[in-house]
Amino acid sequence: MLSPVLSAPALAPAASHVASGVMRLACVAAMRMGSHVVPRRAMAAAPSDHRAQLAQQSAAADEEEKMATWMHEPAGVHVRTEVPGPRSRALLREMDAIQETRTVSVFWDMSKSHGNYMVDADGNVLLDIIGHIGSLPLGYNHPNMLAAAKSDEWAHHLAQRPALGLAPPHDWPDKLRDTFLKVAPKGCDQVFTSCGCGASANENAFKAAFIRYRNMQRGSSEFSAEELSSCMKNEAPGSPDLAVLSFEKGFHGRTLGTLSATRSKAVHKVDFPAFKWPVAPFPQFKYPLEAHAAENEFEEARCLAAVEQIIDSNGMPVVAVIVEPILAEGGDLHASKNFFRGLRELTERKGVAMIVDEVQTGCGATGAFWAHEHWDLPSPPDFVTFAKKMQASGFYSRVEFRASKPYRLYNTWMGDPLRMLQLQVVLETIEQDQLLNVVRRTGETCMRGLLDLASAFPENVQNVRGQGTFIAFDAESSEQRDLLLHDLRQHGAHMGGCGERSVRMRPSLIFGQKHSHEFLTILERALVTRRHARAA
Image 1 (cartoon, rainbow, N blue to C red):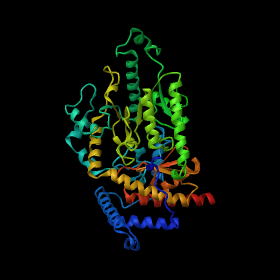
Image 2: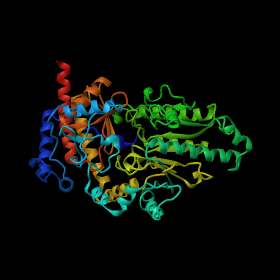
Image 3: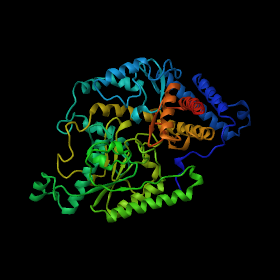
């Protein structure tokens, strides 16, 4: 059976998408006044358990409204100019003389942005649903973060950045326990902190897997004279032919090692030398899931069989398999927990390390702190890599993957105490405000609304899928997707794309019911705009 968490249950479409939009607007307005909209007749007719559920929803909405007020969030979006507006366009011209600008969509005002709302250089208030590519855990200027930033502890780390591998602060072991180890994935009690990006996390996980494999091959951590001399010429046996297997449409970074495992877009890879590493097919699900269960199950079995065949027949030993819980940059591609359980069983049986790349999915985005928790694995992965919402980057691993000699996994910084202090605030706030529950509730609301819109606008809302608020849908084409993203900005929502034609959500963990209703209303307006433009 396929995992039920990948898509919301099919719901009857609204009688009119316009009517549903009016209802969502009413919900937004009522939630701003601290109440939850429930039609009077529906409340009267609801059974006791339904009334209790509605009461819980109302209480949650009240709590979210208090949180929004505390964070000084704007009442809602407010678009004053075209996005980007004249000031942003002038900044683009100014920046273009110095740096690449073709990926820039908006300039934002750091002091005026609060909560889930970004204020751009032209004064437009935009609902931020891409969250700086999924790296903004608590939105903008969260009071807990601002309060912590005024402390002497933060000031000391602002004044100097230590080389942690050489001379860490005296309280570094305590800080590691209070932050990284507090949320360590089950079975992974070692943490390696790298220099800040997901690529560095994955690159070092590759190296750790190679080190252990070679130590097991030679039966020792000591190197021969031939190995030491040949590696300086990039030749075997010191530089052995070993491989990391990755999946079609996977993305793991842009350093040369991780780029060899990246398969999302050719433009990321072209012109760069690459290791001759193998690639396996990743399941291509058909939606809705409940209508294609047998086909999708067969597809997963096909892909697992391909992985095993590659491991058995590849020209160089496959030392590790790396996989994202959701293939994000490749188009938010999902598989069931049975696929991942099968992959874990296969890697264990073949003696291949399993690296779970949680750079995008980690830190609560799917409603669990780690997305792989949804899989109920029989044994933990060998590595879990992290970055983005965690603020810091690195990997967790089992102790047997610790490097056998010093300086083998090393860099100047070996992490950043300031980012660790940010993570401490993030973890405390997640626990204090029960943000994983917020993510789950909001995700359910967004999925239901998107399925309604898929019925009303089937040309540009297709294959709705997600876990928590890690949600995506497909437009008709890449061109229509890009035009829809432009229209969304003009209506007040800052979103992003992925894959060939997908629109993705990567909001902060404080993205609540009010924001989901506002997002769905804006999306509906943008879809109407797009339909009218196509008809013109």
